[in-house]
Image 1 (spheres, rainbow, N blue to C red):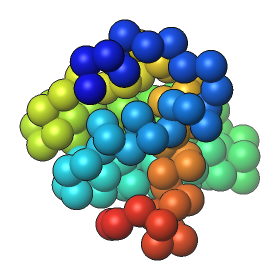
Image 2: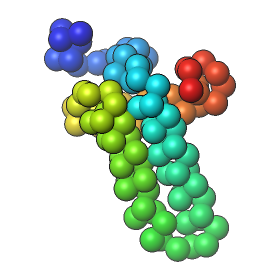
Image 3: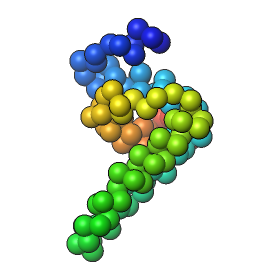
Length: 105
């Protein structure tokens, strides 16, 4: 795994298997699922109510749950610190894959 941690990924397709390996712990994945669901909810509520404070809550909801999963259950450093855009996309793709049963939840 150490070699991949220093690798620069050329595409999200290359990154996603690494992302899934960083989320092997079921509790960590569930916390990501909750956080991503809250992010989606906050964005929808902000759009419906025109209250931008809901948008301010999105990083707290998303990162709070995800980082708790990494620090307390997965015991690794979130990929967000090294691959912020791919990690954000990975959160939503894993959320979708969990909904579809492609990733265990």
